[in-house]
Length: 371
Image 1 (tube, rainbow, N blue to C red):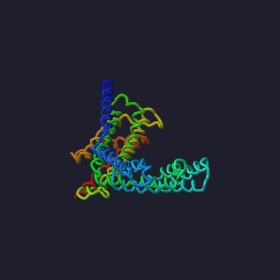
Image 2 (image 1 turned 90 degrees about the horizontal axis):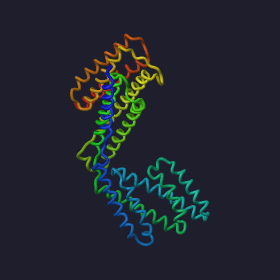
Image 3 (image 1 turned 30 degrees about the vertical axis):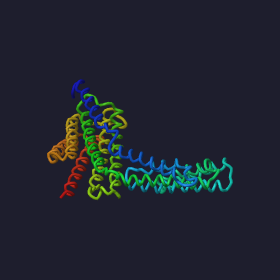
Image 4 (image 1 turned 135 degrees about the vertical axis):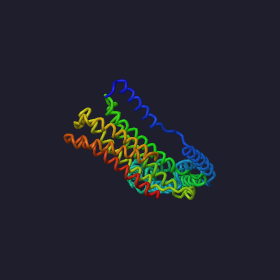
């Protein structure tokens, strides 16, 4: 064990490391391009909507809204969103028009429009258009009740023009591929997991562990981080669909998917170790006994595992890191075999062995794919 000054130093190091891992840029070229396309689309839709013939131009304010919603991050999502939105709006307008046509008073048609629209909004196949079913229905029975035919025609025409303009802007200003963002996030995630493993090693090599609430909360945050990375990979796949840039920049997502799956498994096993160590320190939620002779070997094993994760991330000194980690995990297994059997300690041993095996498997598969 170490003295109080070393404990405090380790806490500060952990805090700084976590702060660096959390820091992310607020504005990116991808977001700035999306903002530019939205500005161009809204302006163009408004100008076009104002010159429509007859009474249609009275509803020109719906065109910019349609353009804003039609400018999506990818070409495929732009087209899909436009179709879903116009479908949901047409259904809602149809509900409102029927209620007005039947001559029911506003205090009847308004709640019926809202209720019916909300029921239909539960149909998931409508996608992004679900939310606009009740909105369009209520707008017709309240705002357009005086002239429902003109209102419905103007709403559909203007909103449709806006969606078309937004989609065309997306085609002219080709959305960038987001492959690099997805892979960079996976690399960051590996670094975060290595730092988290180092934190667990620190718990075993200092006189007192980091703050309990923060420590346990980190285990939950790691799973949310994996979910975020998985979403970025999904967006990266979609960014290439129908995108001319994908003709000269190929993207094989299978490797990223496999990394995400491995990281999710490792995150769960790190959470198991966190719970077991928490039980050993605070005896909650279940008391865990870790033999004194196992503390040093556990700390070393976790530290070597952290280095192995870093080597997996960088591809540097992989074989050496694997051997060091395997040796440290074997040492923990030998202590466990000689010590009195205890389920909590066994959980830690299993987690270490399974994480080592999962990383070995992932690296072997990646090498096979490259050959």
